[in-house]
Amino acid sequence: LVRKLAWSIQVVITAVGPDNQGLADPIVHHVTGAGANIYEIQMYDHDSEQLFAMLLRIHWPDALPLTRLRQDMTEIGRL
Image (cartoon, rainbow, N blue to C red):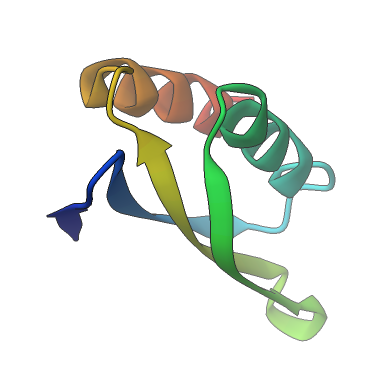
């Protein structure tokens, strides 16, 4: 989902995969460090299945390219 606002772009980031301690931290720190505002965050840790899922809805600053955000999220996902 990408929706243009006056000063930012609304972006939804999802992360799903094997439970990996410390995955949420670098995602949250990256987007807030870039100047994004977090409007919604949901995290699910299903211990019995060892599955982690996260949904993060942010307003991304219009001046920053979305391509860079995608690249950075891909790199964080490889950690």
